[in-house]
Image 1 (cartoon, rainbow, N blue to C red):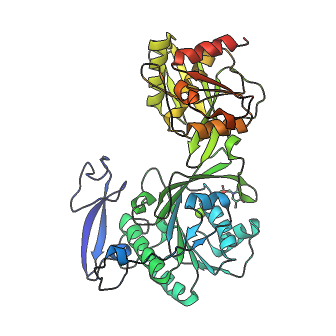
Image 2: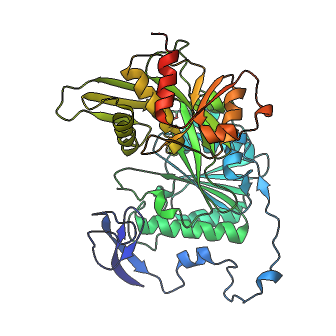
Image 3: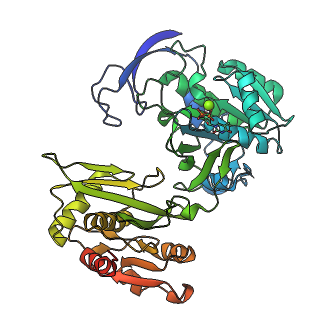
Length: 464
Ligand code: TYD
Ligand code: MG
């Protein structure tokens, strides 16, 4: 066994024999860390993870002759989570659940364990918390099952042994950063350890048909290897997102070898654990009944779900040489572009104004369909006029001030009308082409070709 040092990129796991200032893999700067690795004479475990058959000898086969066995899907007991996974966990798959520390990964997985235990034996391996801590959480979540086994261990060889002994159907690893392989000299949580342990777990999942869920912390400073490095190794990657000061937790599918990605599931963190949110469409709307200047509502699409969100804007006279632009939940460049369009095409002079934009509920939207709502919220604040609270804006704003068409238009309109909103602003052509007979008669559809037209409408209809 030869000992060697190699350099890894903290961001993407790129491996290099010498230190590099810029990573050729992901272009990040100053991201290389040195790690000791022991080269094993046997086949590298990471290669084992990718082999389909795991036999020493592989055969060349005709693609047409390969028989696809039906994948067995196992429900987690939560419809929101099953949808993100593509109708449940696939038997014998390895799923990674990432998220910042304290976001609720262990809580969610413990709740899932309670449901999975009805289906078979679950082995919960924790390297982070003691058995008492895990038991206390389970008690708090009211999870009681003889089918859940607990193991406090961090050595992957020991874990493998215990799995052989107990033959569980499901295995939880909490968390990947605490596990280590004794043949590698670097510390637990380092890139080579995390990669090696994951490869061994992947091998175990495929060989024994055990469904494994691995928890991984995402840390911003990169001291501990982020699970991003593992994304290409595992079958499915989910991230739990949410703001510390909000109780909503969004479970997002980032990679899925057995289904679509981009789905989200919404949970609410309560004192009894994470509770599914089923009225997803309006969960992020603020609860004030009055409509104040500076707010506009938009319908955004995440996977198969349509969510209504409230965009708030505030413009105020600037005392800086360079006015402040603050964007929360949207891209700052997008905001700059919208401000430039408003100034150039609509003669709304915001050059002396500080502009703050915030999406309510701590959620982030990256799709361009939100442009029109951002622009309207800004105009509403600047002109100090209220926008009727039953109005929703959907449309992308182009550089000439035109309102561009967006995807899933019909789906959004249907959801908006279902939620009781009765005025929808959108691209003129898309509104003309819409099949209106399926919609509520009270819904007023206002097709606009340019942002000017939308501004004129709200100025006319304002009550201030
Ligand atoms: P945890 O699952 O331990 O986070 P992670 O594993 O991602 O680090 O969750 C920790 C937070 O969840 C903690 O701040 C307390 C909160 N929590 C509740 O609000 N309700 C509950 O029922 C539980 C178990 C935790
Ligand atoms: Mg935890």
